[in-house]
Length: 162
Figure 1 (cartoon, one colour):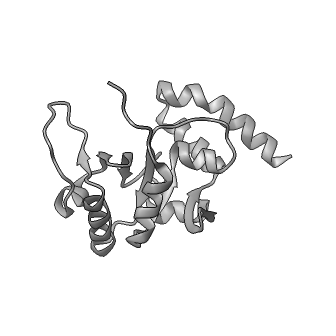
Figure 2 (figure 1 turned 30 degrees about the vertical axis):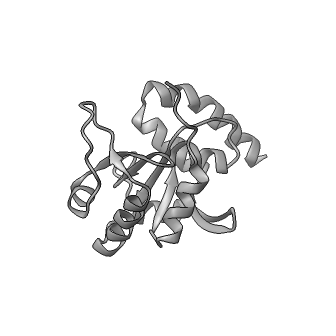
């Protein structure tokens, strides 16, 4: 069974249309920053106020989000789940979305703001984590997947700095 390719730009559009305050992190941030890699999901760190999380839940409801559940249950995101979860791994009609409360060594939306910048993507202003911070957070996690991509990210950063 083949799944449809993720529609990452459409995911970003829905989040911005719902005025969700977030920072794009992970693979998509690296791609926006010029890294020649591929990713199949969108990772975001959200501002954690109740108002912003409610806007996020509204956005998630509009794209039929549900938690990735190994048992196959259909568990939808609601304010209680999103507020209490450190990580929400979701499937949506537009592809996988990982909503994180923090990354790396406890980096939150607030602490990441100074390491991000607004980028114009498809006519929308979207906060994206800088490549140096993406590298730092992936190095901290130290997963096999992250270790595999780190040399390419470092080479991209080095080329950008020249």
